[in-house]
Image 1: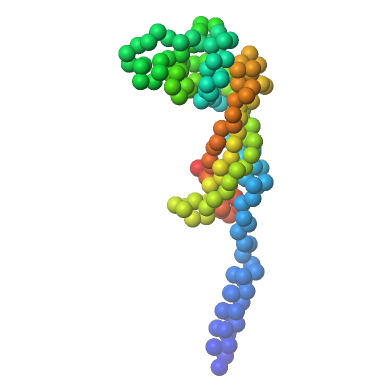
Image 2: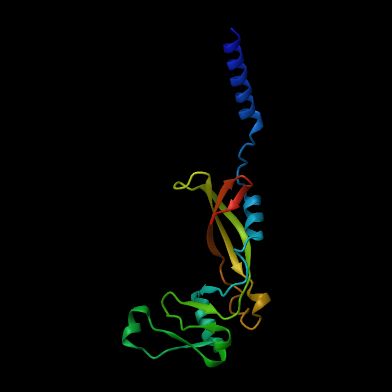
Amino acid sequence: MRAPFRIITILVGFALIMIYGCPSKQPLTSDKAKELLEASNVFRPQFPVVNLTEAEVQKGKDFGYWALAPQAEHHRENGGMLLVTPEATHYFQGNPMVKNPVITLRTKLGGRLIEIKDIQPNPEIPNEQIVTYTYTWKFENDVPQVADLFKDHPPTEGKQGFAYGDNGWQLSQ
């Protein structure tokens, strides 16, 4: 009669340890996601690639940063090309197309998190959440010469995975 009692005691003890002894998974909150993103390398200074708005394309022309290139046959489908002026090559790299213009800055900029918009489970990876957020580059701090060009630049949307592990929530690789 002792063996069944001993087995039951061990099973009950194991169940209690599993229920009370294991820390429960804390939900990923917006505040926690913001804290982890801001402490990460996501917004470290880097050479930003900026999608220019129509207003920024026009302002860049007005400020003398670029001009419309003469039409070339291979650029017609993209609406033409903008040529960065020699004076502006200190700030910009490459020549953006008129349609969907994208330009790279030559100065590393840090980013600024604006808002955590959404947190959803990753359907492909268990114990992972996908955080959607908006951010902007710190144009005014790092490139004051072109800050006026980008002063009305809309926030950019980003996504980052977060995994729950032994140390709680962390950014996924």
